[in-house]
Image (cartoon, rainbow, N blue to C red; front, top):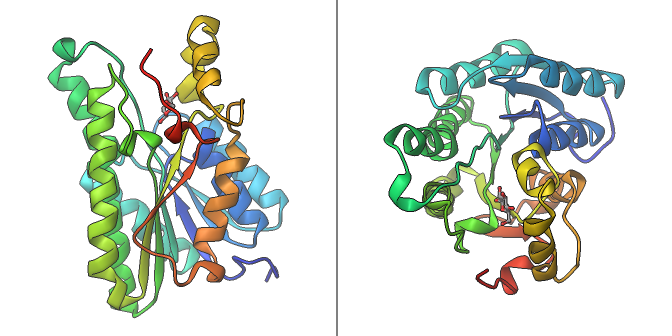
Amino acid sequence: MSDGKLAGKVALVTGSSSGIGQGIAIRMAKDGADVVVNYSGHIEGAQETQSQIQALGRKAIIVHADVSKVADCQAVVQAGWDQLGKVDILVNNAGVEKGSEFVDVTEADYDLVLDINLKGPFFTTQAFVKHLLDAKLPGRVLNISSVHEDMVFPHFASYCASKGGIRMLMRDLAVELGPKNITVNNIAPGAIITPINKSLLDDKAKLDPLLANIPLGRMGTVDDVAALACFLASDDAAYVTGSTYFVDGGLIRNYHEQ
Ligand code: BGC
């Protein structure tokens, strides 16, 4: 067993085939965890995550699951228990965003965003908690939210609704699950260099004003987020529950409407 701060733990990271989820999965393995790597679209990304974890000497299984479907949420948790013996840490990371004028939002796009970003964490957490209660084990839930759980994002109304929802879900579950020794927290990234931001990164006219709003003057990296995730999942954070932690270079304190 590794001697890292997550030694002996098993982490399930949804959407760990790319971006922030991939970074968290690999960094948790560096800290000693075995990992359930989940993907819905890109198996190559999941395989990349798995091989990096295995190169660190940790176990990684790949599980396909579309968290917008409740049966898949349950199956991905079950796979962790079946193949790695348990799941101690759940990172609800999988997420999407769809930008458009509010009046043009379609039912299909609304459902896609709400189902992946809010319904998915809701039912994956429910499955995770049921197993922990049966086994009488403590646990950690981390939701990868966004600065937009609190800060406006015009033209991304469905995204804001989903992230605002996950903020209240976290607060509610922290109180309900605290007595079971299950902690629940949100990490709220700002502008991080990941595939979800590709169109922004490729558009200097949009990128420059955003950078001007970030007090630290740069986009964040996946590792900036992963470091906090590992802390919140570790024993060092045993008394931390019910809050959101921003990793945004100060963006939320300095937003200006364009
Ligand atoms: C969104 C990005 C956006 C960032 C800062 C994130 O939640 O996914 O598209 O650039 O927030 O506004």
